[in-house]
Length: 152
Image (tube, rainbow, N blue to C red):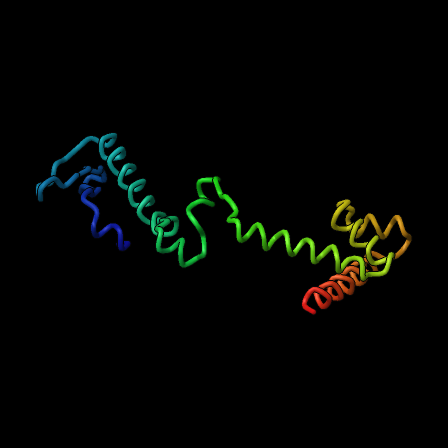
């Protein structure tokens, strides 16, 4: 018998002649019911158990959200960026634009095509006539150079 069957309050018994009788236990008393009532009751019980089993995985609590770094405003779709975050974001963009001027024209063009124009590395490789991996290698080198320049 499975673990959940021990706690359920309905049973199906096989009679000696091979037929079945269906019982729902109400206040400790076995009440024999027709098969359709038994099946409906069993189905409702399965749905309820399934809901409880899934509930723990999908339960959202404010404490759990705080631990995960998720704010309630993200769930409501009304996230408003704080003034501090907006200022930091603007400063980083300004710094990035200044650093971009330190790159070679070829590197700036690569970044522009990949990130601002939305051209894929494969598509750019076909256009220029080089291997796809060459574009990926150049992109990674330029991004590393940008990271170093941003941290100076």
